[in-house]
Length: 424
Image 1 (cartoon, helix red, strand yellow):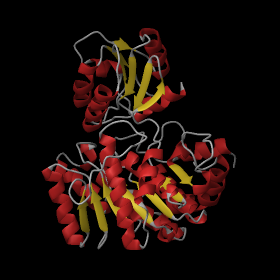
Image 2: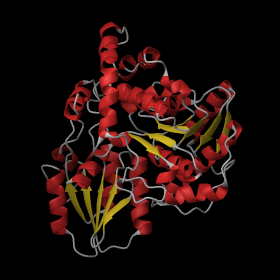
Image 3: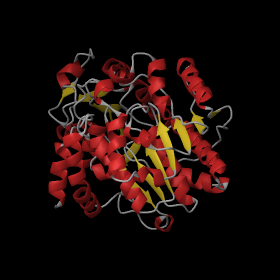
Image 4: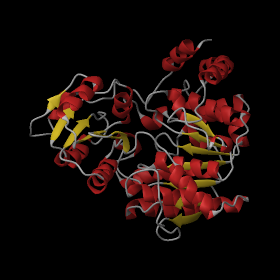
């Protein structure tokens, strides 16, 4: 196979990231991916894993952990989702020897096209065979890609893997691992049609990654969510460590902008400390260096100055509130031009009410995904002058025309929009 054929094959798989109109608990079966992993020799069982779930900040927290491990001399695998531009961004390996080299990509260490082709050529016959006889239905894109990541990490003989859950946790394909440490970032209302209408229901899904007798590192939570996490830890005999209580919220210098990143960095610090129970002890100086060195594109990322252009994939209410605070507290500007596109399954009302008052000018746009809400739908949540565009490229051109030297262009509401804006 050649790379375009691999892309076509992967795009032919069921992809619930693009089409969210499905019954979650009926269609997402952990047994399906477990059976497939049995078929390919359970590569995940050879990995030492730190597992990260939550609603907000799980990608940043995963990145912090991975960069700390790399700084401490470990070869660390990082598996995240979704991606900004290229699905290869989801699978990365950071190596200590590459630390001082000039980065050729914002997503350093991502899997190569050649390696993707080789792995798909090997797995495709087994995927097709499994899909023919599976009583749990056909494998999804996320399940196939997760299995591919496990196999890749095993063969590259990485020291540790950091896995970010896709959605939820309990039924997520990444939850087929027996992780050394589990990390739960702030839980907020998201995917309520799938995970549940209350914070307790959502927390039940996120806390599904907690394993018997292990250490759980947890961000500050609302009482409703924390009660669920405490109960899950108690029943599993897991030790709960809370940021701000058992884990100090230190004064840290991060490579990422915003006070909310200090919580994510503290969670990463706690996860690294928890590895001591598995015989892995890392000097605090190296932890600080790793936190400072961390890069995570698309999260309060500055891509241009004069005018400032800031990208952030805030796609729920809590994340929108966080980026609003970060803009007000960290930047000086004459006016804010908001480029906004939101997926139809997100909290459009909450996001627009939060970000609307921040903006002097608002440009609505729509990413190239079936999940994107139309500009006309988004416009219904505002009572002011708006610019409606036919796509992210047009929105980018318009923002450039409207902005003057001391203005700030904020591109947010969806990682899909951020990815297209970066690439346009």
